[in-house]
Image (tube, rainbow over all chains, first blue to last red; front, side, top):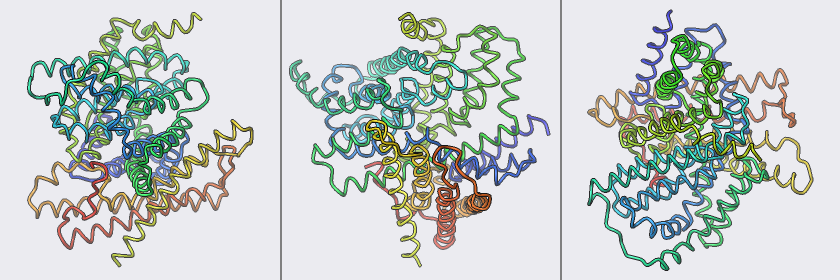
Amino acid sequence: MSDFAITTLLIAALFLLLGTGVWIGLALIGVAFIGMELFTTRPVGDAMAVTIWGSSSSWTLTALPLFVWMGEILFRTRLSEDMFRGLAPWMERLPGRLLHTNIIGCAIFAAVSGSSAATCATIGKMTLPELAARGYPDEKVIGTLAGAGTLGLLIPPSIILIVYGVTAEVSIARLFIAGVLPGILLAGLFMGYVIVWALLNPGAVPAPTERTTFAQKLYASRNLIPVLVLILLVLGSIYTGIATATEAAAFGVVGSLVISAAQRSLTWETFRTSLLGATRLYCMIALILAGASFLTLAMGYIGLPRHLAEWIGTLGLTQFWLLMALMVFFIILGCFLDGISMVVLTMGVILPTVQKAGIDLIWFGIFVVLVVEMAQITPPVGFNLFVLQGMTKRQITWIAKQTLPMFYLMIVAILLTYYFPGLVTWLPQQMMSK
Amino acid sequence: MRTWLDRLYEAAGWLAAVFMIGTLVFVLLGIFGRIFGFHVRGTDAYAGYCMAASGFLALAYTLRRNEHIRVTLLLGHVPPAARKALEIWCHAIAIALAAILAFYSTRLAWQSHTFNDISTANDATPLWIPQLAMAFGTAILLVAFVDAFVAVLRDGGKPSAGEEPARIE
């Protein structure tokens, strides 16, 4: 059977299963099973069990449940209220007001989290109910959250950058440093969008609740101290090399429990609900991850991503058009695969082409992360969409539609880093010159 | 029967929560071991096993709380009769896939046991022990899907009673 026929068949099967409402993780497993059964001779069931076991028990993934739990604990403290009391007065003067707390909140949390979904889940835990209670329009709240949540990948620490660094044999420390400025740039673009949108739609954003003086704002900022201490604990432990992301996540869980206890909001009831809530939320993500890992294996065996990548390699494109083609390719692939699988599957094939085209591998790493960020918010398989669907019970297509402006802004960010590569390469070069 | 099944899912859910704590404990143990200079072998691997156990054992419990994600666009916009048919189709596929998962997970643990498969990391754990959680978790998931299927056949698949407000509260 030709590649085209295989692709068509599998995509049709995926859409049929997902569209009719089969649980997403199971649908991925089903498509992978059909694909492998039809197009390979390998014993499918055993390969499935080994792959799912391997991905479900991998050490690198342990940061995920712990950061999810940390978010659940923080959600049940008064920290969210405190954070808003601290941030809100500074945002009230900006057009778009508290929508910016979504973006700044995500940017700040991204500095303690390596995962886009975890950032989205944690900040969403704080901002979704708070902004809804203040009467902000749902579509903008969810759209900015899904978009800004992807900063978790770009702003270090970042799991996807580690995966890329290992695959491409590039210094992970330099990749981390390279992600800082593009992360701030992207957050700035998101905020700029909210400002423009708010100016064009006066009245869409609720009026500020009260006017405050500068001294009052500064005094309100004391509410941010617990968050900042926690960030210092988690971020500091990573940056000083004391802890890995997982260990920092463990610090984060303990730190959150301490903050919760200090605020006297730590009861058996809040501990129990946060633990069970985190277990279910993690389980929901774990089932999808399990399905994605098996689908990734199946596709690898069938050779689909590899063939697609090879085909793009034969087109003989200029550097710019090669990157644009890769971007389109990754966006399409990102509709069906999660970011880590995408990177793991394709880098081995694409990197030689990329190097031959004279593209800096550090720069390309940031490019890949930006494209993977887009994949996080493209249906039907986009992790931020899954997380937000779980949190808001909204339709995945509706969420994706609200996130579309952020998607375009990410393309803008890619173009900006293309025309101003210094955004990516300058900081790591400063690091090297020392 | 109803009570017993619910107790099974709840118990597995609680066990999953205990393993979530286990993940944290092993990660912390690894950190403190390094700081205070005592060495506990294989904490990384144990943390991974705990995480896996937590994820698998919570499968049925999470399903019961209606928190596994699915695209409900079509389901939510069709008349009750079509909805029932769709739900039967979804549950039938889910049962088939859960059965495949449970069968091969059990087989994996069984084969690890038979061939005395040992973890290649420094924990040297016989792999069938942590893999048991995968076998049990997916088996309970299968039970839960059959349970849900029966409910769909009986009352046409109304949204389950366990709609959980926690995530959106």
